[in-house]
Length: 185
Image (tube, rainbow, N blue to C red; front, side, top):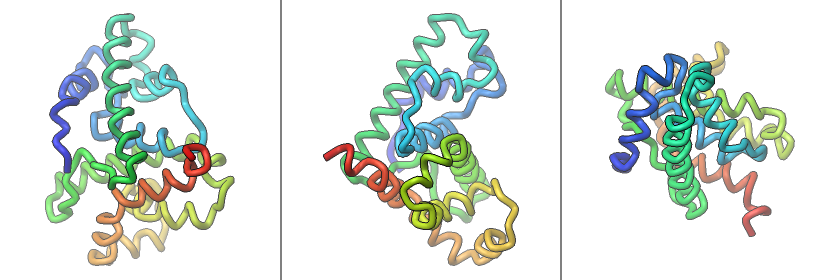
């Protein structure tokens, strides 16, 4: 895990009561931005800010929106640099699943990733549904977003599940390449 200390201001802004209860946490925002960057459908910076903040967005003053936008832009660039460099995506959490708190963080990260993915789902599956579904399986399984017997079986097989989870940082690169290799060349 990378040291995300440089994003402490963003974390504080997202946790501020003035932003609202629906605002994503830092871990959730990281996942949401990761999915947005990977997605073949681009979302404007303003729209991303509104989606990350939720209902509280309407009550934020211009200065707070500007601060949040600048900090979110910094995190977006950080994630983009990693993906463009072909580096395993640093997650703002530990992948040690023996600790309940770490698992809750991973579940939150995966759930938020899936929320953004589902918002753009049709675009994700235009370029090969089966391949994308297979690549997303570890994130889907860890998110807890779907109740499905096959996913329940994966989660109950701890060795398989933990091996799948360990692959998530690398899978983010693979997903990014599927959607962006032709555009970035």
